Structure formats: structure tokens, C-alpha cells
Image (cartoon, rainbow, N blue to C red):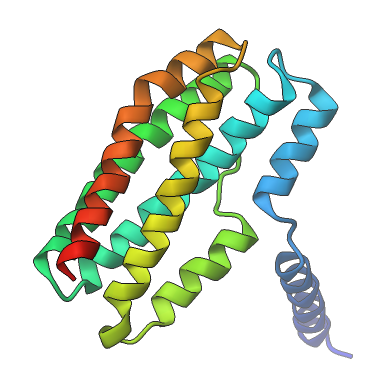
Length: 184
């Protein structure tokens, strides 16, 4: 075989192997939890888990907000989407700084589970998008309010303080989507 054909075949094989590795990439949240179990951060397992889960939730809420800002059929949906993008960016930054200070590994991307939910929202046609978005936001924020309330009682002071400080914002997100749902 010619040298250029060998190179081409080698490139095809390497590309196929890389594609195979990428498609079987582990879930980012599962990776973070596994790393934290092995490294044993300076905080309790529930506190570390809270940070991991809430980073995943903030990533998801940002992406859902982005979709709503672009695709919402009503101004209230688009405005709420922009609010999610702004607030989730700030919360995500604070969570990442807190995790770094506490030596907790957090995910860099949305978990597979949340990615599936986001894809369902992305795939929704224009007529169903708003209803799916409202439903998803209600579920997300009900879960988050509960998680923040629980975390505010942790013995890990930094995590508990963060949760207490940010709980009113998370509650306001839930209240906001409830108000939009009533008008829908």
C-alpha cells in the first residue's frame, strides 16, 4: 500500500476509535461523585453531593432558560428564560467557587439524565414548548427549594450558609413560574 493510503487508513481508525470513546463517555455527575468518593473532600458526603447536584441543576436551568428566551411564544416565558440565564450564571459561578474552596469536584456538563430532559424540551414543537418549559421549571424548582432547605441545615457551615443565602432566590424562581402557569 502507498504511504498516503496507510496514513488515511490510520486516520480513519483513530477517528473511529475516538468517536467510540466519545459516545460512551461517562456521565459528568457520576464522574464527579466518583472522584469525590475517592478524594474525600473536606466536607460531608451529603454536602458534596448537594454541590454536585446543584451545579448540574444550574447548568440545566441555564440551558432551559436559553431555550425559553429564544423559543417562548409569550413575553413572560421569554423574560423568565432570560432571568434563568442571568441568575443561573451567577449561582453556578458561586457554586463552582465554593466547590473549589472545599475541594469538591463538580460536573462541567449536564448529566445524561438532564440532557435527556433538555432534548425533550428542544424537540417540543412551538405549540407545546411553553407548557413543557413551565412543567420542567416547576419540577426543577420544587426539587431545588427542598434541596436548599435541607442543605441549609448541614453541619458544613460554608454550604449551609450558601443554601440559606440563596434559598430566597430559588423560592422566587418557583413563585415566578407558578405565576406564569396561572396566567397560561
